[in-house]
Length: 444
Image (tube, helix red, strand yellow):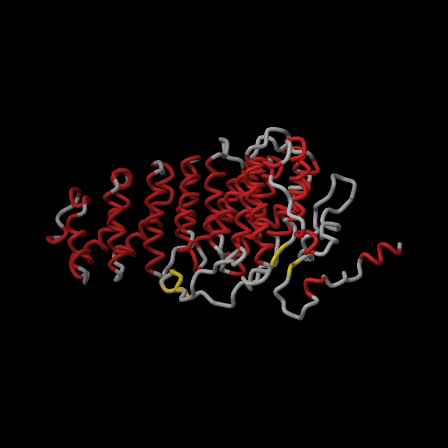
């Protein structure tokens, strides 16, 4: 009872912080929300509660550990555990002049461990799995403190005068990510054993980090999350649900997330691997999460990746084309010309995989919208709409339903031929391939 009470009292201040109130010190404690879910199976013993080194950091670095090459093979697993413990000490990089020697010792230890994991030829023990996950948590699962700044959007594009954020701790963080990435990818890692520690709480924290402002970290997170998804089949459904929550937050709450492009890249690969016929939950994900992602103002930052995901669904099941096209029409930008150009490009990709039955279900509302684009005063929108007729598959779809489509678009074409201010749009209108099927517009 007394031990439980005492354990909740604040720890004694480390000697490293006794030399003043300067905040640039060695960080021992982990974020308060990090101690969730890291259990030894069902025993209830919490990993991380004893993970903070009891020794002063100086004693950890006073006696340098030997290199792996300098010890016999039989002693290397124990040395690996010691190096992992040493790397649980997290340094503050805001002042590069502090703890320079200790930082270099840790960096060198991380480099060595990356090589050790890459060349491992024996199954990793449960103790090793626990310590690797613990070290990763200490270094990576930290409170994110984004710089106070706002993104301004002009025509859907981010206008940001600030320099890209570069985390000063990246020299260590990159090596920690690399170590964990190779650890997860290693054939010597038993997924059935590791899933007890690389669990749902761990994955939720990992996905939260995708909002990092450092693009280098997001790239490593993308590779790490993809590896975790591939390695742990038991977590796949949970990962998709957590990603859906992030999408919902963006769509309905924040309208800003730094890692959307990376998350969608992962999803593009996941969707590509969906078995046929598509499950109902996958179709619901398309309708409820992916299609509404066309709504946020920051669409331009991830549209290429989103468009790829959408195209994957059409290729998997062409019957979804009608649903997707109607979804695009629902979120079609009315006053944003740059987004309209993006929508028209995506629309062409979808139409390339659309079959006549699905096309005929949505062609009337679709070509009413295209007619408005043809008459757009923004020349890029009008040109992009006219370029649809350069696609042979789209042109064939139109020809099969010309009796319905021509009455919708001919008035728009005639207005362009008579009075559009852009000479390029005027010329494209007169020369479009559709003129082969109607009287010359200039004489109509």
